[in-house]
Length: 258
Ligand SMILES: C[S@@+](CC[C@H](N)C(=O)[O-])C[C@H]1O[C@@H](n2cnc3c(N)ncnc32)[C@H](O)[C@@H]1O
Image (cartoon, rainbow, N blue to C red; front, side, top):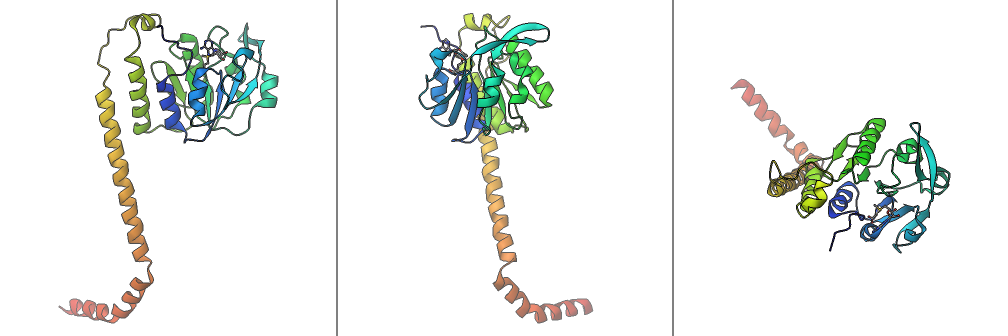
């Protein structure tokens, strides 16, 4: 059976998991089977143009938004009706997932309408394996003055610098998906698919283990410091210092004479 590339894959899901905590709210452009995956862990709003896909995921809140023709850079393209979005988008969400409209309609309308969305949340752009989507991601990162993290088939624009641990976990999941893709599919996007280096999954696995060890160490150091601070401020230490002050003074005087 041929694998469908319409729904988000486990690489994109790993990115979501690394960028926001469970139960956060996601604003998704373009819904499908992947919406069910997201809705298991998050609260989801789905902007969907195709009435046949509106309501596909019972747990998501749908915003039905048909496509309209718009002018972008002197040519006509189609994108979600911005008037409907302006009235219907939720105010509060912690991540934007751009996976619609379908590749056939094009997604460049996002660049013309970015002011409709929050800028202070991470944006995941799926399908940046395609040149059009990759160019949109590049330009959006430029417009927002934000770093662009590109994995083999999706990209992230983040308002903050991602940590080694986050990047390693996302790359590990993305490579895991890539290692199972068929050459025929990859060759429709890349000029060759014989690899220059291996997948390096064990490398990322080691980075993840080391980062987690460092984080545990840091937490235990912080706990020890908190304990020391508490002792430093404790009433019994103050009383002890007060009671032993004359002895400490004498010992200082004797040291001075010696
Ligand atoms: C790339 S899909 C969005 C997929 C969605 N984010 C997911 O993870 O399942 C873009 C658009 O194609 C349509 N669509 C969704 N799933 C589809 C499928 N399995 N086959 C054909 N069209 C689909 C919907 O109209 C959707 O807005």
